[in-house]
Length: 165
Image (tube, rainbow, N blue to C red; front, side, top):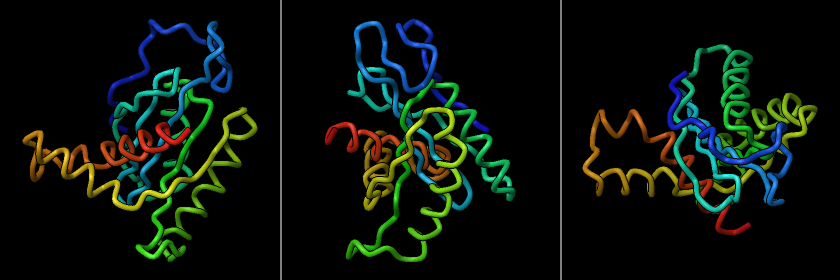
């Protein structure tokens, strides 16, 4: 697992992921970009206005182990909601990649909902393209971009979700 930003201990917050802070604002949201080699992770602030990259979870080849690593990341940032990117086809249809993601979503839901953490999906079309474009503008190309693209794509997905909420 490759942890990124972390959650920041200075924010006021409740003990559980689904609770609100003292000011009554919702808890954090985590977004997941499910890749075949890595799972990109991003998280929001407690006010659900800004997405930040967390890092990636390297796929181990063991889906149960990978899910446990994802749950650890979600617990680290104290999230009450998880948004999983759904790779729909350009036409909006649910193809094989989206079906695979939906299977993963159901497995995560079984693990997270008993903990009071909601799991949703969101259309992730073009998030990787947008993340790649942003990384290129920032001067990160090639190997440097590959190491962070999944987390950046999760961040793009999460910011779009936050902006619609």
